[in-house]
Length: 170
Image 1 (cartoon, rainbow, N blue to C red):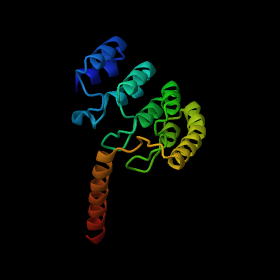
Image 2 (cartoon, rainbow, N blue to C red):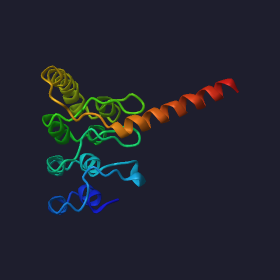
Image 3 (cartoon, one colour):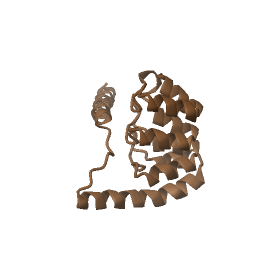
């Protein structure tokens, strides 16, 4: 875990700002010891909206996924962090991506009983999809895919299917 991961998780705005200003850490570094979470994942999970904002302003990619396919929006939804979800949506972050199990942030919010987040995410998902469609029509390039996770996710899915088929045949 980098010092930026730690500062983001702790909610230390001044420390995060200093680290980013000095380019001491990559805001998109995934910590393999913590399920490939980035500093943005930590800030979103803890509800540190201003840290989420500054990380994104310094190049943090909200589309990056943990090893289970969770974006910052999934973690904010799990913790009921409505302010973070609103901020992510206002910055056109992908808030409707499916994780490894096919769950979107709205489903995670439902599971954990965060009804205010559920209501907001249902509306925001529609707006997110409309924005994505408009961007495609106008040729606006969106940063809404984690290419690394896409490959990793395919490998995990193929392994899961293979193991399932082996058990079925036994």
